[in-house]
Image 1 (tube, helix red, strand yellow):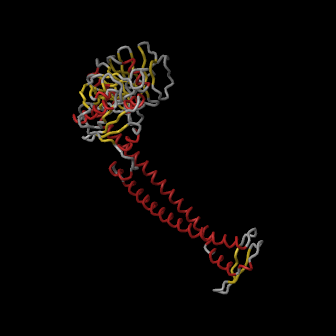
Image 2 (cartoon, helix red, strand yellow):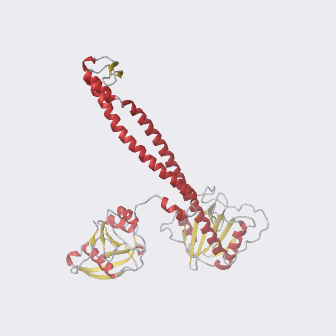
Image 3 (cartoon, rainbow, N blue to C red):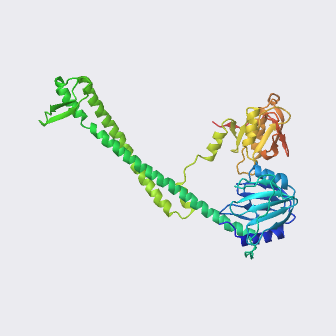
Length: 449
């Protein structure tokens, strides 16, 4: 469950001792329940999740959203540069007030969980959408406290560090349990579906069995063809092999030849259908057996590693990314790095927008041309050979290509910005480097096929 009032009190004691005076650099909202405040001195995590609500200083916060949510945008607008002045909480309560210079952020750790930002006059200037009845411009009044006494929870070492370790484990266990439940539900549903399928196939097989004697009946009708007449509903013919009479149902609206052909057609349907149905029943039975074994294994699973064999296969990341980027020209450097080239101003914008912050961007200085991006993935260093190849691509796909040489600028995508209302392909670049390029040199780029 979320932190108790005593646990919150212990964390707030630590925050008062360490963070008062810290100024807000940025605010992120990784999920509807979470906020991450970035300061020069560290980061503060607040989560009002109903099960995993907590707050405290954190060392690593993972990858943060590049684009702020509307609520995070309002917090940035009002709190950027503001210093923390203090933390307040009534004993026994789980409503925390963080006082900034000129504003107060209220964090509600009980239902309905959420956040509220007020100005110095107590007017609401930002509120998240978590069932709060308050709207912008309304006056906020603190609910009355219960006035109960409270002791801060005791931790060995930093309450923030202990809290984060505890909740990381809780979230891990919860994630395992939820994934196991989801996989079990899917496996059981598939097992039931296969049982229904086999029952339906068995019914189809029983229906087809009615046509098993049609070939024999057709052969008898061929022998006694002269006795067949239009208008007959049924005819009894003696089987030469047994001497027994055989009753055969006919279609009265059909003539002798048509009734004969219909009997053979029904037999062909029986023969072909039985082959398909038998194969389908065998396949369904094998799948049902595998699903039963899967359910048994999942029921015994005790860790996330036990679930790995049962996760749905997903297309390889590279294949998915390649499919997403199919609009761009794609090359591979001699060092194995993918290099993408835009074909138009709009594609150049899309290429920049879809690239990661640490991908490298290239463009010929002062001349129109394609944007070139080198996908770096998780690698921090890009070999000089790949940089040279990407620069040659940028020159080759620019209006300067006819000169055979030029200056190419390059930088990380995170330093490339699109000005508001700028024409397609126009960007502002900071922290760029340059490289001199000559197309006469041996180019090693190899296009993906």
